[in-house]
Image 1: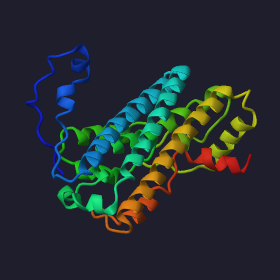
Image 2 (image 1 turned 180 degrees about the vertical axis):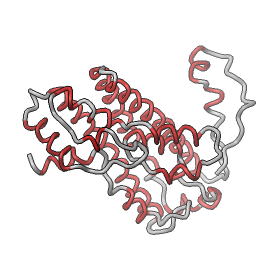
Image 3 (image 1 turned 120 degrees about the vertical axis):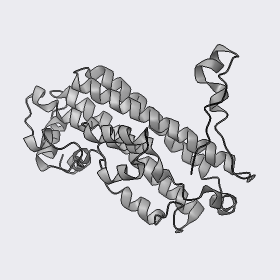
Image 4 (image 1 turned 135 degrees about the horizontal axis):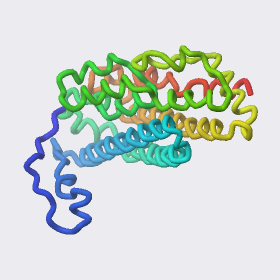
Length: 273
């Protein structure tokens, strides 16, 4: 899918509110391709999700930087905002779940090979959360905005990496392979990291800062998994087992993509407490 060129859209000259939120430009971005009654719901909610992905990326990256700088309270505030933004994103699926298969088929062919898989801001957000995959940059090679943004996010430490980097300050040693590694590679679960988190959760008062960070990360991981699970349900309800618009295997591909959880030791430690 290609987006229309809106560089000639005039800046709103009305109220201060209109100028601040760029209402004229924002409300001109709905380039409906058909007269199908359900297409506005599909396109507008998809655009809203893109904005929420951007917000989620901004909050996650800022929290990472604040943790690295020692501003943990500020980071925790940002992670609370991130959690709330994620919850709104999950609710977006409620609107799309109202589309029947007949509704969707009225405009599906006009989407071409466009798919949410092509959202670079979603990939950027995934990268800062630690779901790294260098292959996912390839579709954006040559894109002057997306490619450098993704390569930068790929090469930087993740939010989880920043939290693991705090453990030594609280007297808990982690293996160097977790702290000094190739940031472009996906994070792999580590039994010593699980043991370290088990110490934190075993003595939450002693390790209060790490415990609060752990629970804040778990909120993010939980809402991310909930977004994925709801996505699968909505696609299955609307499309069934059809091939996705981008050529993926649809529901089967989404299920496989959802198997890898964020911050894995925070999930696994619960079984050993």
